[in-house]
Amino acid sequence: MLRRIFLLLLNQMTIYQQIPFLTSWMPILIQNQSKSLIQFAIHYLIRSWLILIIILVLLAMKMTR
Image 1: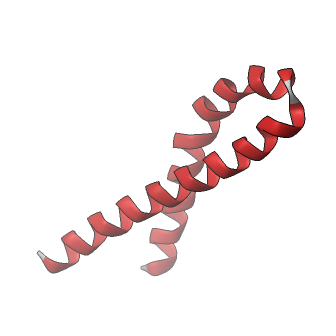
Image 2: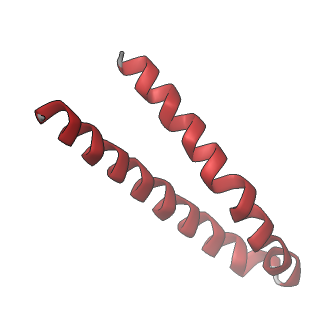
């Protein structure tokens, strides 16, 4: 059960983030590599944690219902 949820989380994170996210960042990454690479990493981490928290909250709501 927990393993299935974890795999679902991983799949959703890769689908929702990487495709539109990487393409929107590509021109910036090419323009100035070092500065935007750090911004990219921070932004990516924040976004992945937000999605994780939202999904966990939704799961908690389902459990209590």
